[in-house]
Length: 91
Image (cartoon, rainbow, N blue to C red; front, side, top):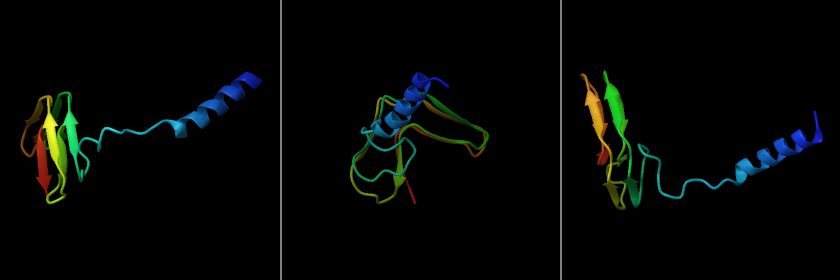
């Protein structure tokens, strides 16, 4: 293996941990606590008992603000399917 391949591999391995994480809030569909925002999301579809979320889903009483703006279409089709494109609080 050439030295340039080894050097490139080592540089890539070091760069991955340095890559910054998301700073725009919680993952869609995750538990959000304060100031959770879902914005400019795409379209999602749940079929046959599936579940889809393109808004904010969080535990009831989590506190803080939550908003969903300019969200796409969330479509649920079939028995037991669930879709959310806004702010949803659950136990």
